[in-house]
Amino acid sequence: MKSIALCALLVSGTSACTMLDKKVTVVENFKLNNYLGSWYEIARLDHSFERGLSKVTANYSVDGDKVVVINRGYSDEKARWSEAEGKAYFIETDNIGRLKVSFFGPFYGAYQIHDLMEDKNGNYISSLVIGPNNDYAWILSRTPNISAEHKLRFTEKMTALGIDTQQLIWVKQ
Image (cartoon, rainbow, N blue to C red):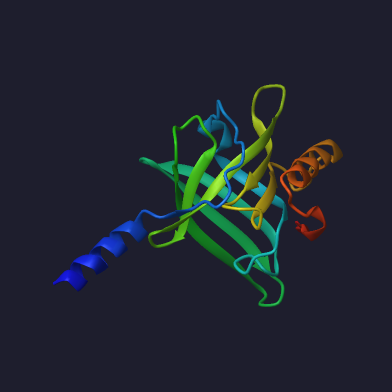
């Protein structure tokens, strides 16, 4: 009986687990409605779940209390599209750009919006996202290309965080 109780305790503790090894400064006064919609992945650090993908996009929408995340990319090697649907929730309050996202069961990873660029109307047009640690980072844009100014700003911020920007994969859109 003690083993079953211990297993239940471990499982319940794991189900709420969010991987967050390194907290970074995130956007405050974050407006989710300005972030919803489609984004192009401009650059990323390499990881197995996106390896070899081009034409990568992310789409964010709201369903009740969660943010629905749909990531999509094309594998030239397999000659087909790959798509993953996840769910995200705010870790703190909904005006702080730190969320937890899951694409697989009860396991969550941090999604930290470290920096955003806005147009003159206050619409978010590019974003620097850091994952649970410096092994995960993305530059996103509302368009398939990013301005040299935004690219420089984001890569400088990544360097300041200790991220090796030479390891970035610049995604073919």
